[in-house]
Length: 296
Image (cartoon, rainbow, N blue to C red; front, side):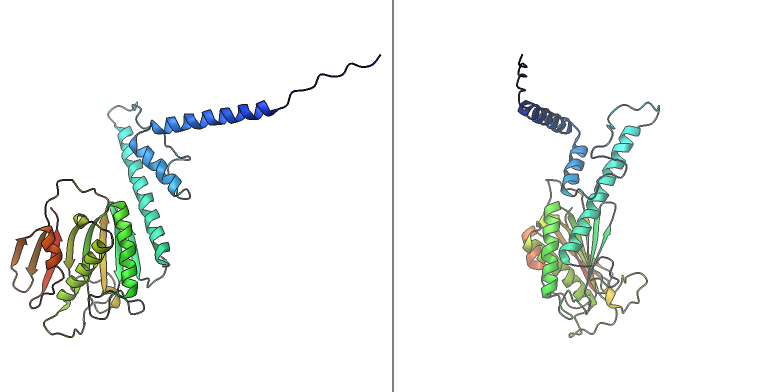
């Protein structure tokens, strides 16, 4: 008697379809869960996927931290809020460090180089960027406030960084001791102020909103780099302090002030924002002076 033929097995395509369905449902669940988190966690998750090799949190083994909104069992302590604030600071520092590294790569500068033309320090509220005017790679044409080709490239890249992250900016100009300037009535004070203001003009020309510029100041040779002789070329520099503080919508017009260190008299004249652009490029001659632009 012939054996009965075994019944044919159905194909396994339904298993693949079911697995895809389960995977899609799991992905949907994850998206809904992440979307329900607070703003800080959403920002942290976004930054993680933008720079996946730099984890936004040191104290977490994954993308999302433990839910710090749950009530704490420790009486008299607001540990949940403390953890949230600490996590926010860690996120900001990680983000700022990532920005600094990206900018060094963009400028093709070795951040470990001893006499690098750019130095970036991460502060508690932003970045402090120092642009050196070295003979090897000058930022300005000699004894002037005119940028070199390298200087224009640096300012254009900085303008993009500032505009994209909406940093508020303080610009300071510095010179070294012993400069031999072509005009006797054009001193280091005028040169440092003009160079700082040239940086402001370049930033606003390329991308930066005028409202983000808080102050522009020239210090001449009064603030040399620590542990450097006053005549060192390292003192030829422009520093930009970038803060992450957001500007309020009710900002007033800018104010320009000039102070004379020789006479000890300070005079302030309020002008409109349009007048600032017209007044700042002018070079002042005579007594030692510093120029600043402030937005209250």
